[in-house]
Structure formats: structure tokens, C-alpha cells
Image (cartoon, rainbow, N blue to C red; front, side, top):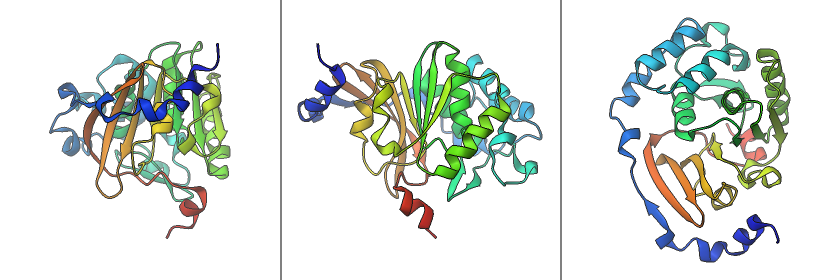
Length: 259
């Protein structure tokens, strides 16, 4: 009886004993070559870009390759010129937001280890690109939720996905503050955060599936690292992947008014 998620929230103070959060580096995920090689992955077409990401070992699995081949980045770059769509760099999408570089998208999709039928959440879903990739991978029995707090981006991202992939029906973009996650549809097999939290986002850890739910998020203010947190019932394993530079996970007013 009762909502198991709710009892987790109540027990949070017990649950987050430091002894329960173990830190492990996953050697297979770390290579010193990733950062410099990323810049050589640009292409002139989407197919080119994906081929280069594969060649540089940023895409390792068939499912991530298929997703990125079937979600065309040119539909998700806002007012940026079409000529830069397949460059391996972040691009502005307006509202002081960016679409991440393709190598980061590839990397995060690999780290999520998505499977058919999974329920997944993309926080700060922005252009909708990664939400569409996630929806492609989890298939029609799964569902990808995106949450975005800028109303203009919510509207545009829905239109971007509908234009690019009218066949894709297993996604929902919600307008809201992603810092609180999206409790209505929890628990999630994977949660991706597209902006840096200043500290470990415990609210999101509580919304992970207790059997191996994964949270992929940058953490830190000036000195940021990409982390994967894997939940095993009431224990969390923490893997530091690499140093990164992301925009901060912040409130709407701060985002829209920053210089």
C-alpha cells in the first residue's frame, strides 16, 4: 500500500547517508581522446555527422546511431543558419538557450543505456532534439517526456519534433520547472539534464526507477563535471565521467534576463 515514491521522499534524510553514495569511475566510459576528437566530427549532412561520430567512437551502439540518423538536427537549431546544422558545436536556439554539440548528445544517449519500453525524462528539453532521439530508441511501448520552462521553446520544440518526425507519437513536452523533475510520470528508467545543477539534484534521484534507473547530469558551478548516478533500491552509485561546460540549471526569470 501507499506510494513507494512518497515514502522515499519521506525517508530521504535516512536514505542519503553519505555511506550509501559510493563513488566509482567507470573506466570504459573515459578516454582522454574524447574532447579533442569531438571537434573533428562535423559533417556536411546529418549522415556525414553521424558517420564521423561513429568513426571517433563517440557513438558506440547501433541504437544511438539509428536514433541520430533518424532525427535530423537541421529541424532543431532555431534561427541558426542551416549551413551550421551539422557542425559539432553548440548552437543558439534563442531565449538564452542552446542545443548541445552533437558529440555531447551522442555521449549522453550512450550513457543512458536506453531499452525498448523505457520511460525517460529529458530536463531542459530546449529544442526537443534529444527528447526525439530518446523517443526513437525507447519505441512505441516506451515514452519520452521533455520538460522545459521557457514557453516559447516548449511551443517550438513540439513543432520541431512534429515537423521532423510526424510518425513519432511516444513523446510529451511539458512546460514546467525541471529542477523538480516530473513526479506525475515517475519513476524513470533514465533522466537526462541538459543544464548544470549547482549540487547533486536529490529530487531527481528520488524519481529514478529503483532497479537501475540512471541520472545523467552535469553538476557544479564554475568547475562542472558530467556524472552518471545509478540507483539500486536505496543506494546510489556515482560515476564521474568528465569535465564539461553547461549553462546553469536556473529559474526562468534568471535565464531570460541574463546578459
